[in-house]
Image 1 (cartoon, rainbow, N blue to C red):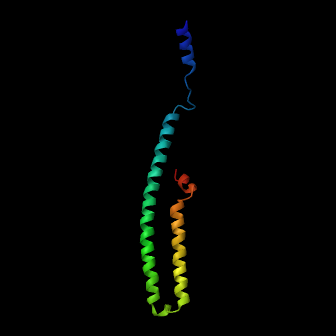
Image 2: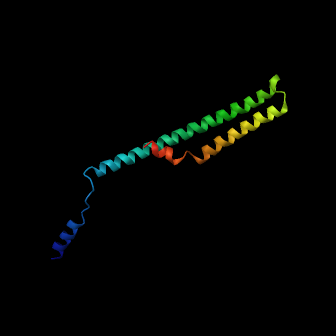
Image 3: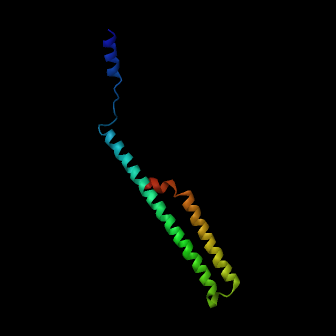
Length: 108
């Protein structure tokens, strides 16, 4: 008798999936999310590379601007260095905080 009741209970415990291809769609979505994460990691590494390259070239440019004859004015030299530092800090903040989530979700 217990065996019969156990079979009935096991038959009731089957999970009905909402759609016939539900499992396939979920696996496809998981794969897409993994691809997006891998791409984001690649873009993050490339972003750091170009940040360092831009910081070095920008530092060299601000030094060279001071050597130009037209930029002998200290105020212009100070303004160019302040602009360089502002751009550097903005880019660094963006790299450390990461892109907005809406950009990552829109690529799905």
